[in-house]
Image 1: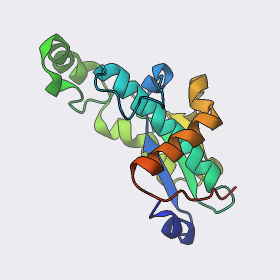
Image 2: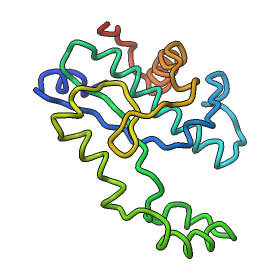
Image 3: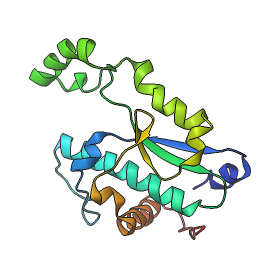
Image 4: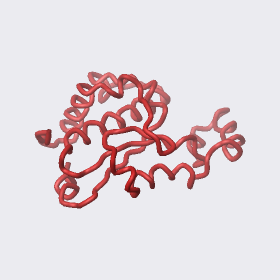
Amino acid sequence: MRLLDLLQRTPGARVVSTSSGAQAVGKMDLDTVATRERYSIPAAYADSKLANVLFTRELARRLAGTGVIANCFHPGWVASGFALNNGGFIARLLSVVSPVLARSPEQGADTLIWLATSPEAAAYSGEYFSNRAVRRTAQRARDAGLATRLWELSERLCGLQPVASAA
């Protein structure tokens, strides 16, 4: 919120958020997301990636007509050490297969860099990308009402005064 004025004053400003294919299984119950005492790590991860798509869509809606572009992307499975700190069988398995099957960090960053810098990507806002292409998200990630309610909840939880949307 504190960057919105600067973004709007900056020609060609872009906001790129990292999401994941896990957004497709996110459930996010806004009534409990900030107060639940127990959660599973995979469910919380999926909810966070769904939240990133919803945030991107709501930011793009609020900034429509200002020249600021907001998109999100799925980098793919990147050999970054992700989940290796969890220990157990999964961590051991990932430590063996990631170097062989996962993308390099450079490959994972390709769509991010493209979204942040390319003239072609400037034609899009509020979209979810993978491999430099717009991809369809889960239906829940396209729920404009949920995106607005998540934004408003985030403002309250952060102690920010609600800001009227630009649209």
